[in-house]
Image (cartoon, rainbow over all chains, first blue to last red; front, side):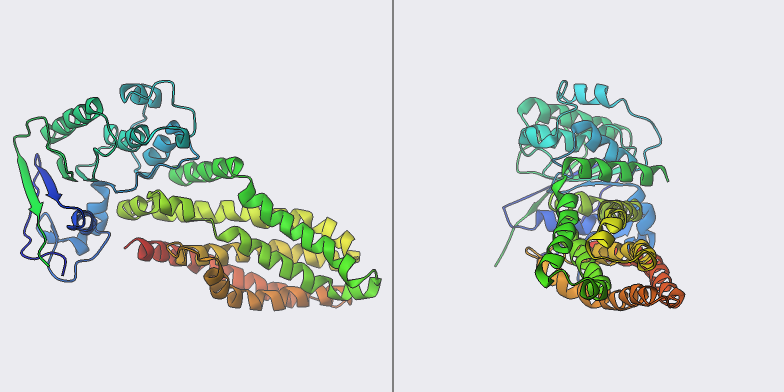
Length: 192
Length: 221
């Protein structure tokens, strides 16, 4: 059994931070929360209805960025962003050059992502969060490979999202440096 | 629809950047068919007799060759997982893969059929049948190979597994396609075989996209 006595909820405006040692099951928990894996026992609810009955509505409100970045190495930063823009069916057009400039990738918009560093690829992957209108973000280790400035920028963006009534679930080993008022921390410990 | 168009453009871009992915199978097809007459000797009647089977076997293997890498990159970098989580764009993604897979591996075989006819001394009546069977049959080959690729995407070295899964499904197609070409070369009607191939294609067209979606979901959960 991977999890015992696990009871958690995330409401609008809240940030749930899941911490724990390597192998404690953080990513597995996120995958269950995102509806990618099914729990053997226990129930997931979206609002007040069981998740399985409202999967389409849930998925339409979910932005999941997993352990792998979802960035194709052969495509450029712009092409990757446009792909996710189309895939998530965002109604608003984006100015991809402005967005990439904001993320510190000015001048790198049109070269294949395999030439970018790990941190820059992570930025391309996270760019989605700047145009998505989805409410629930589930992010697996979003700070990996990012430098301090980018981590701060991302946290500021989290604050904005929470203010607008969004909710965030993320895993990280790092302490969040900004102050989140509605922060719930969950520490997964393991017993053998 | 907009999503589908965008996904197709993405796949075409990737094909343009990774030319080996689709050029190798096409070259394989040409090489096999070039070597065949050299290997069995220049007996015109012998070549004509064997042509339908040989062309179709080469086509099957060439499409299979292209299938293995189809979903690999998108699986490794997490695109498939995140599309499954987002749910709704998955069908467009699968359709885009199917369409571009046929454009890059099936269509070149159809376009090469005149060359093949020349190499194997196929007469004009049989050539028409050969081109028609390739036109009807390669989309079915693509559909089945995409299904196989989706089923084996998380297998590390899935190549042989893919072949074992998919080759049995190719056999009915192989039989009817080569029978059609053979009938045509003996000036007999071959509409029956074509009709069966068309029926198989329509059947696969209706079911395979859904099956591929489920296979991808299965592989990330």
